[in-house]
Length: 353
Image (cartoon, rainbow, N blue to C red; front, side):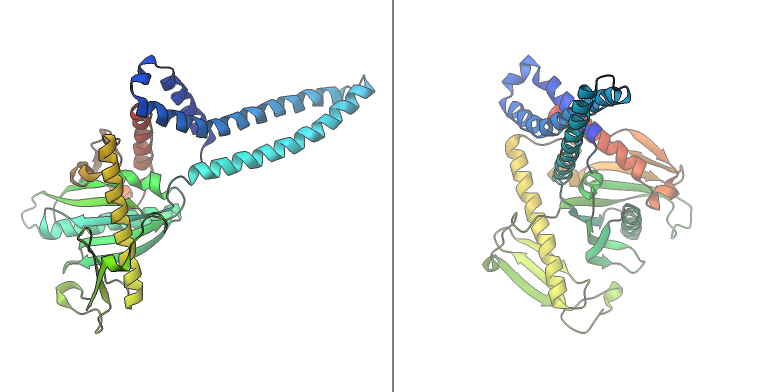
């Protein structure tokens, strides 16, 4: 359920921005703020009405505890019953509006992790990031489904793509997109030297069926044999799927499942998310770009975080903050970091909306 206090604070922030005389020169921002204000106003007004009802019920209670005027006490009792009914209705209406506010975000996302610079160590770091997000997802009670993966001989991932589904998954994960850098001594390093490797993370909203329409004529679908590390065959049938989106040239694959149908569904999910990302990037460019913490074309190449093992520290470069207990963070306990990023994103959104 969305936080009522945060909504009231956002509403007040918007009112303050709308009172700025210079805002009229930025008509797009003015319209966007007004639209958001109208949405939040419904919730705020009902909450204020609820407070007023509570005050009137309290006043009636005072009359009922000392009924010097029997007729007045009777009226107070009748009105209290009516107010209780209205209070119940208002609470349900607020609950519904808060639920709608929460559901403005998609409840499913796709996460892509790819090894960057650093060879096997980069692939191992990609696997560590996948483990971190997997354990975080378990703590959040989200469901995780692997859509595609490409593992190397040392147990790392050249690439892994997975879906996360659950409450607040989008606002909590959206700021994870970018280049993650690790500084540590690899297990294969005999001289004890610290190496620097990277892995990139992309976080894409999973579109609803009505958001992305794909014509079968636009898709070229091929099958091939699934393979694992070192060229070992996972199975002896052509169950892996490769889909080429002809209008854009995008190519996606999936080989995690044992049958073609499941792999085809996974590949289509990956393709739909990438097409939605492309649409949003094009729309963002037309509007002059979005806030820095949100996913965009540049975000895939932006170094956002460093994991320094010798110093037991994670540094997020966007908010310029350090977080210690690296072992606990890599075990999925990243909520303090996530909350800081969400707060920073909210603050930036209020000033750049």
